[in-house]
Image (cartoon, rainbow, N blue to C red; front, side, top):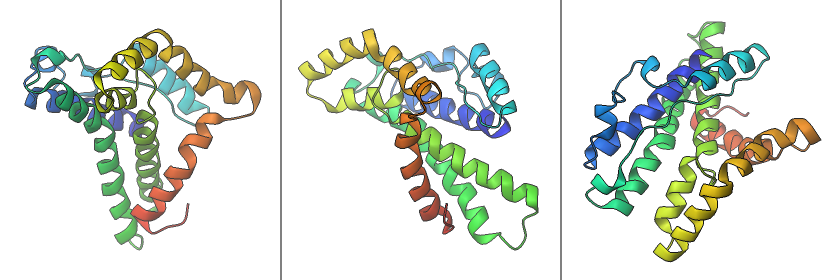
Length: 202
């Protein structure tokens, strides 16, 4: 729960700060350039974090950062950068925690090591999950910014209509059918990056 709250706060702060640097002050006026988790947490997402953490795994979400792309200096390029900064912030958190594991193994207590491992794994999973090109995840904005304009418009219309339903299916199809598509997507790159970052097999 603690790792999720910190990780989601940094993720949303990274979006907000990068949007401001691109010329959009919407997030600042909404009070989202903040390290206070209360400024970012979504009530339903927080309840989900609590319930899922009690069951042994954590899943939840924060409030999306309000962004006005019409205020960006270079709308398509800046939208790409702002979207990338969320997953990138989680990769940076994972890398920092991984160095604690890599170089501090002989000095960490049991609980310190567990927290460091959770920071690495959860932040890697968050980064990879958010890069999935399904709305409203960051990956959908990234792909839209990379597509030719006509294709991007069709993609955005499709994702606006069906993206959230596709995402829900991806998340819940595993528990319903025992075919966990989300785990198939997240686990291999998480294992690979964990090993690369820490030098420890996952």
